[in-house]
Image 1 (spheres, rainbow, N blue to C red):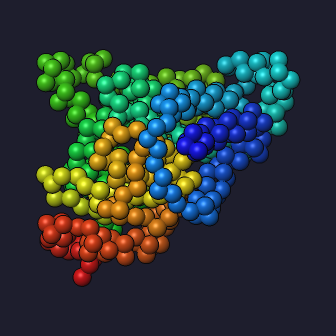
Image 2 (image 1 turned 30 degrees about the vertical axis):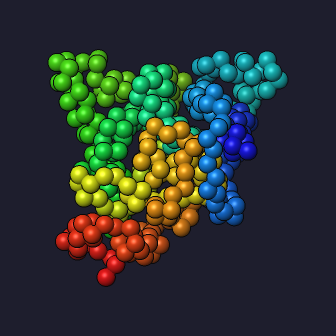
Length: 376
């Protein structure tokens, strides 16, 4: 069953590829699938605490590495629909198989294409970033890291592979971590602060690394700067296919994908605190064990165990009794976060519970000194 469960995102990518070939109103199907179907089925099907330790790494890595080809194909299909010619030869290729993509393109409206942009943005933020997240932690495997960065290029966020691994995991739940949402901070304010903070953090990490090696900071060896070229190449491909419309589409895809990523960052550590220097523990991440979220996002939902051992393969991550729990699955929680009063209504009672049941004496004192203790 483990192989079936963690093939779910690949099945979704196949379905969305078919929808992109069909064009027209089908472009909206992926968006509705992600926002409506996933959030509803996540709550209907409940949770699971099963972990797998004896699955084939070859297969489990295979579903990860399949993501980048799908992302490139989806981008090429959307860019072709935006184009006035056949920029990547897909119309001719599909025509040989009896599919008249040119006719479908003629029937596809701007409103339909907007659905395609939103769908690909969500796929970039869910499939792309989550696979990248798994691969970026394999810092001793260059192919894994390179694939990770190419996936992140779709969200113009290749620096995430640097700051997340060498910054976030070190500073999580402290003021030094831009990716930890503060108590009372709204999603959109967090999105701006986190994005700018992580970008700055990645360049600072790279500067220190290069200085320690005696290398020039501003050179081809700067991974933070070099990663921007990867996003520029994707942008150039869209411009080649569809000019200004292609550029706007790519930047919107990146913005949607990046927003999805930051919404995930927001819900994973919201309001949790750690005294600087204190060891990271399971209590410093919010967990969720909903089945659909867990399978689609390669167990990112078991975030506490991931922070305790970032090298642990996604399929073997475990549910932990010593981690605080979110009340719903990831997509549901992200939708709730879009409405700040509703978010506070749902999460602040749970934060009060965290203060009472999980926080250390030093953490409660830290919160009390800031006037943020909710336990009374």
